[in-house]
Figure 1 (cartoon, rainbow, N blue to C red):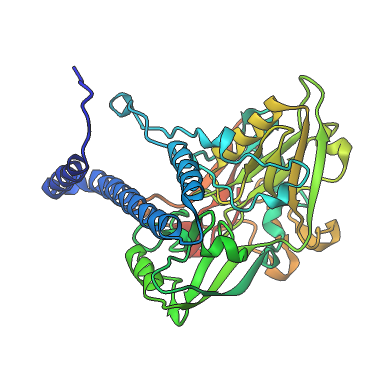
Figure 2: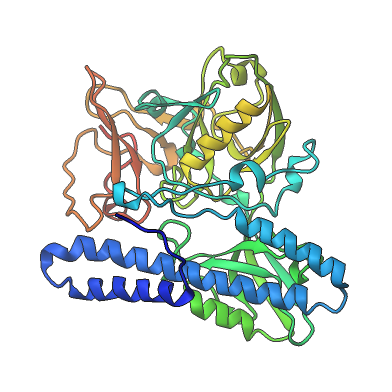
Length: 438
């Protein structure tokens, strides 16, 4: 029988100690997979405990010590912060029954936009990612997970598009009085990655009323590349925190920001029981475009709402979805979170507004070489990449996390195709296996 008892701070630290003691007792080769998994859990829990302490310190410095706020303003800011923290996701208590999941109360409340007519203004709202991997058709929020072999021969396969200009590097100078915090929180680093296996240090929260908030230039999801002369591209989390604390009164930030040059709000009117009519892929941990963690439109269903609207295209980056009631941020989220956000928006209203980033150029059929589907290979290639032999032998040695690619198909005469190659995985490093190989 499990009895719920009050949990004290020392109990939390003791729980981590017990976990580390168990970890240290695993010394046989057969225990290595379990040991690696426990190591990840320990890092996540430590990161969350440390992040909570940082949030409290930031709250103390930027709100309670702010001489420009009177008692009423401090009380309002404190209550607002308490409400936000109460909405933070937590592990469910059904861990004993299987894999723990994440509760996401913020999905319906923390992403709310005060002015639904302009969804671009929701740059400071936070999202709560969950885990999912498949390509998904979006039909009124009902997900239809299926192998997508038709996309392999599509002239607008998004792996052929260049999204480099969707990212900008920006310098920001912040001047802070002595003893005042910068007013933002970070996550990530080489030891506690928050974006798949990337070492990126990401801005995860802008403190309301803090220095960065008043300056208005730093945004949620900005990736910090440099602080003054200190390189942040490959740094442990604690070193990044210490670097920001020691940055002095004048802080020069170099950040990388998602900012597609061509952005558009697309409004779709959805009758009851109708489908939106498009498919999406991508997200954190399962990027569909190598090195990019965005959510991308991969298929427009003929005759569907999106197709009839005519403005949404295969290859568009989906950045935000807005119902008449609530807005949902789709930047730096996992696939399942994107699907759930679209489903909720569809449940909330029949009018859905999408914020998309268009690729600079959509490829034409003349720009692409399509190999004949003769049973050997049916990929899409840029002409400048050159041709590969129709049939070849590829030798891969399995790594700790597998071969690093996904397959689809296998029914009837469709064949089995490479649908995804994990960035940095065994297949990717070999350079001999390509998406679309059969």
